[in-house]
Image (cartoon, rainbow, N blue to C red):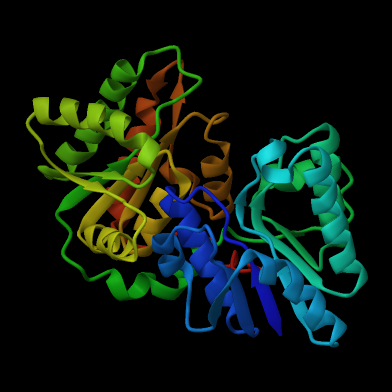
Length: 356
């Protein structure tokens, strides 16, 4: 089979690199992957590609699926995984949107297998909802990754869909056991500011830092890693760092810079991490892959992806809500006690391993 994948995404987001890498690793067992590399950051391509990937230009990427299929070869067209933000960036506007829809329809008509999996869907409305419903109807596989998306596609009468796991879970299943014996003497954190909060970022940072201090104290840990996995989070993470240092903790700083070296270095940090605290889904799951214990601190509406995916994995005991702009101390204590009792043991859902 010949598979065509366009890795257009938020390149500064390590989570997007992680799930794209896992998707390509899974698909590489099916055949040769033609990877659009023109105008894609080289560092991002280096992270996600494998030995079965061949880089091609935009023109070849558009034409080769048609040519190979007309030669009666087995062809698949792969959409990126992750959250669908909707809007013009996702679907285009005017003539561009029409061309995108027409291209999908042509691929489907000539027998190209359209695959879109590991996505969160919604909210969408109007022409953007119709465009996504068209992709679903034409798809060979259309996989949504959590309850919120499943309810959305069911409620909007999507023609074709299936339930799948978040693609980060693939690397957890594959790698986690081999890292469990690593020596762990640090805590790591990675947060984005809460847009729906009534508090300024400085006060939000104080409350997050207070929760991190509780975890550090009860684990007798003095060293904390400030890990910025998404470049837009650096200011907020530094505000948290300022509070931690003022309270006597030693903070080391790491900044993901969209290179393979940086991606691997972050894995090395997480091998030494006992607990990871975050409101970013893939910060939690990427660290968990390396044997760290995840604790999610977030707003149930703003961070719905985090909560739904972790609930699907039977990890609701590590979820800590922010309510009325404050961390739920009961849930934080429950998460800490669960971590202290279970350490690095996996108590999640091993059945959630269907990705495509």
